Length: 263
Image (cartoon, helix red, strand yellow):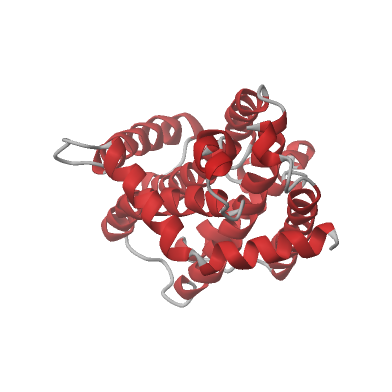
């Protein structure tokens, strides 16, 4: 059987076992916040403080209106928290589940889906910040809001294949999770989260134009801020998802049987 067919079968079995990875994700969240009164809302509180502080301080430094800048920062930071959480935890997906992988014959990608689901739940808590900011400053266009759903779906698809790929590589090379974490910290500052492409002068536009993460943020943030992403952005993000999952599935199928030995 070809490597790609092995990976497709694994993906199908992982999706069919949705009850398992949802349960595992819930259990990990409950275990992480055991005996805590607020649970994951502690993350929401800390992120809310971060959004408010950075929105006011950087808005003043950049000379931006709070009503325009704070919603942009709020959506950007919350979306980045979802992306970085999926990729960071995805890099440890197989390593953290080594006991399950070695003892139970389960599909491999189920542990990647578990990381995606877990961070999606946390994103749901943090999205309260976005709702409060939009309620405070108003929704600029109700017509663009429905596009947030397909934008979030493409966002998750791209974060998912990156998590699957780095998870596979991290199982083989144990230094990679630390490298991924460091790269994400650098990517945060060069991705338009605290700034927008319009704030850059002409000779610095390449920072946004050649940054694929900028387009991932745009398909989630723009509909909430009242603008419709251009069709090249949709095409690029969709193409990234197709090519990325093809690469991730090819690697997963190729090294499917080696993962238990690596972890």
